[in-house]
Length: 120
Length: 107
Image: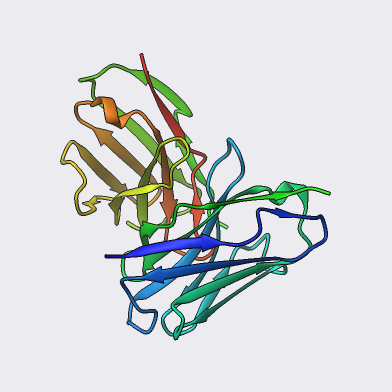
């Protein structure tokens, strides 16, 4: 079955770089039409789409965050990595990764999410 | 970026009620709209894709409609497990964007 799990630091300091890893199973990112997206949710607030990487290595980013985000994949490890530079307390949120089907644009499987707090 | 606006922001309803949530896009998105359900402390779950197609395993009391800029999610007969927050998301163009959410509460 398809599973995804986010991992990374629970606490980062302002100005630091955040690195999150999404480790997945049950599918391969070498398969046509499959993608992995990152979405975040500040406490008590709405979902915010961050980035997507496709099976063919195409990459897409949030307009407001694109100068700070990098998404990459390691197909041999079934992992997708998201880095966010210059972290700020406003970036405190639960970060989710989700499998995405390019043909429908639906995020059909989600990880449980990981809470990242930005504080000195 | 395409802005997605949901209404209402919150709604109170009773078990058995019919509820409709609206999502409006700031520009036309054809049928590239998805709906998700989220319960507190949990990841969102997919409900609807391409505006009106039910995701696998989702009960038939959920339905979606619309195209262009105006979309609706309807729950035909509310069940206790349906009380949650619902989000729309456009997939017409990057960056994808979500609505602000609609919280469905028990009356």
